[in-house]
Length: 157
Image 1 (cartoon, one colour):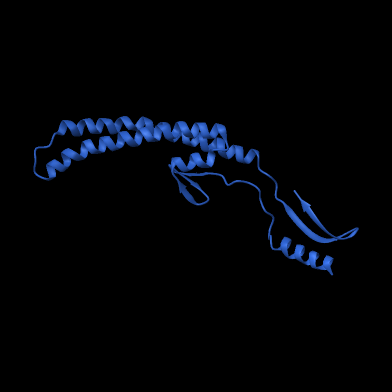
Image 2 (tube, rainbow, N blue to C red):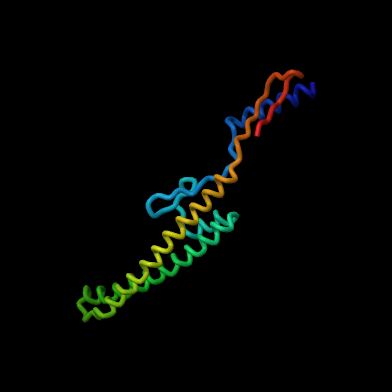
């Protein structure tokens, strides 16, 4: 009776697993200038977390994130420098348009940093995805049924 109970438990357990399981991490998907992982949009810090087990992709993404951070700071400073005179003009004051012009120059200066981020992040994603494909595992299939020695369980990797 114990064997029958164990056999029934194993039967239910293995057939509840469903279809073959894949032991493979999901790739990072690139759409336009955004990256997605498991359907969720990624920020650069999230990409670093995902890539931490892939050294080359991680280092490339770290460099890309540095470019991204600098571009964000420059864009914020430039936006403030433009927004202050515009706000002054809207309020009826005497705006400092030189400050707005410098702000525009700062924003333009952030464009090469964003371009570098885009190139490096795409390269990092390509490295990561290649690493995933290169180390992918085959599906694990579990079958229960009759064998030449009676009933048996066959696991195929």
